[in-house]
Length: 264
Image (cartoon, rainbow, N blue to C red):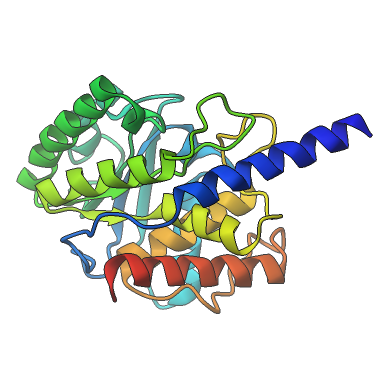
């Protein structure tokens, strides 16, 4: 009984934090996909990407389900647990052949540490890394997209009422500076919690990492942002592991969030 009460209190605090943060962000200057139907895509990040069978696999399956004629998709994921962006060797990762793909990546989706926006030094290091990595990627003919991380919720000690807003502002600012697409995953999480306070997008043991449906929401948001198409009605449900109701709801939230964020 006590554990149930504690869980209920944690959930209430989590929703209160996200509701207080709101779902507004600075306006992105890049509002449309910069690569038409990208097939060679690299995801660079940390455990937020590799949890739950890896974000890149889910996005790949959503894209394939949306267009069964789409062939030759080559997705790769390079992740380091707990890593900020600067921990990655972007030159090695994007050099053709090093990850088994002979041609340069068309799109590189990058994220930083989930707490970078909450203090000055990590925020500055994130910006510096984005600028430097963008130079490497664009020289090879590729484009950059930035993956806006979701805010923490309780019981995470890092959860703050302004975490969604600060994280969104950091990613939009960096994205606008280099002319990159920003994927509003954090805003989609906040919107899903606003519409359905009972949904569990974070693991309750840490309030930081995504549950399976959290990763699914993220994948729908990535797909809608990068491919410029709605995920609503997509048949992919992780082989029956995600309920039809949850899939439909998360697809709708991703679609609404992306359209509002980009003004599409």
